[in-house]
Image (cartoon, rainbow, N blue to C red):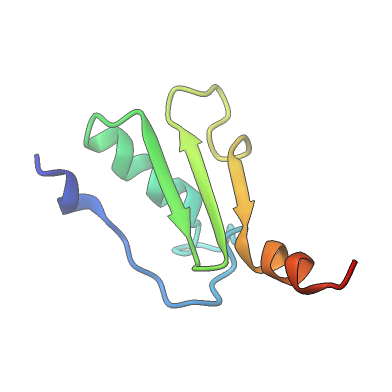
Amino acid sequence: MNFFDNNFLFSEGYNLDSKSKGKYYAYNAVKAARDSSAEWAMLTNGYKWRIYSVKNISPYENYLEADIENTIEVIKEPL
């Protein structure tokens, strides 16, 4: 299976925390990674970037997150 076969693209502004039916993006990302025999899944809406380990006992709740939007706002603030 090709690595690029299981990529998902979402428009900006999607709520990465959504657990609505059909919109549980963390589940979709981790499932795609498992189906591809990958150890890691990455999920982003353009502002927040999350990395999930498919080997974690709770992969949907435990992740590393970088909030780019917040970081940019902090950098813009005067000291």
